[in-house]
Image (cartoon, rainbow, N blue to C red; front, side):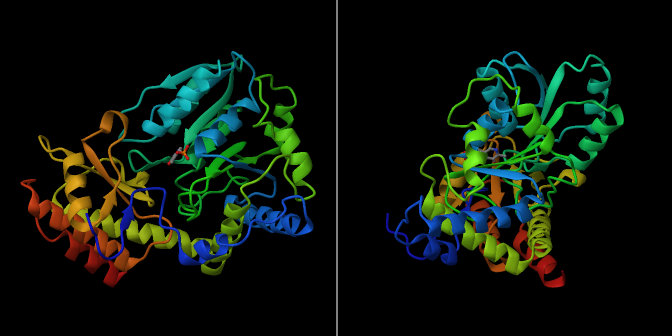
Length: 387
Ligand SMILES: *Cc1c(COP(=O)(O)O)cnc(C)c1O
């Protein structure tokens, strides 16, 4: 089918890649063992430290986010080690599955896929572990399947109150460079990130930001690893090189996206995401549809998951919107399949793009027999105009 005009990619990642980043990547690939490459790598490591808010070590893999998950586990844990994880949604479940396949002893605290990790539960569980069998706690900062953002600082405080030695692992794949995040200040031991969400790049780069404590732990970790081994990577990275061929052109793009984020200022980037997210929620409320996220203090600024009214299929609705308006919305993942649609509002995104997105949804609602109230777009525009 011929579709004129631009495609609206409103899934919560991969996100829209800005022209500046596309142009930066459209260059001949350079020798990754030459001096030009070392300079590029040094610039990127400096820039990434500001994004992760760390003065520590960062590792970059040519990989998806899933690879960076695996790296976060195999470098600090040994076979049979106990890890505490929380069922906040699809991505937390996927990360748990990686841990299970690696032979870890996973305690997976059940959740309702509508709310985040309760810091009080973390505290209680750690108090019940005086022998310190739990070696790590893994949290997904922003659950992209549900639009719920976990309160990492409160979870950190709960861990500190108990004085437990478990390492804290945080997946920031859909929050990094969109929602306030502080690796050092929150004493996170391994932060997992990747390229295709808030960093406005195509898929293909995975990150680990690593604390001193995690580095020390990695010296005695016994899970088998080769490609993901931090040590070889970190040693060679010091001189600006990689132990194997890096994703050079994605790194060209990353240098540009880091420039863009710094030009705007990270605080402004976060404020922009908060504002667009609140405008989106005004629309959803006006439509009298239900947000999947139950608690206002856990609302996500990078995406909004909306429950489809009972008896209506979210995928049929998304299909209609794709065909009629050339817009992709996020689908329901795992047990939410067909039940929710997700509006991505992260990355390279502004007021009029949101207005277009919400207009497509409101027209889609009008074309189906889904019960809703008109006026969501207007509510969002009113919010944007007055904030
Ligand atoms: C997208 C996403 C992932 C998965 O990343 P891949 O690149 O698809 O492997 C993991 N965690 C979260 C929170 C995500 O949003």
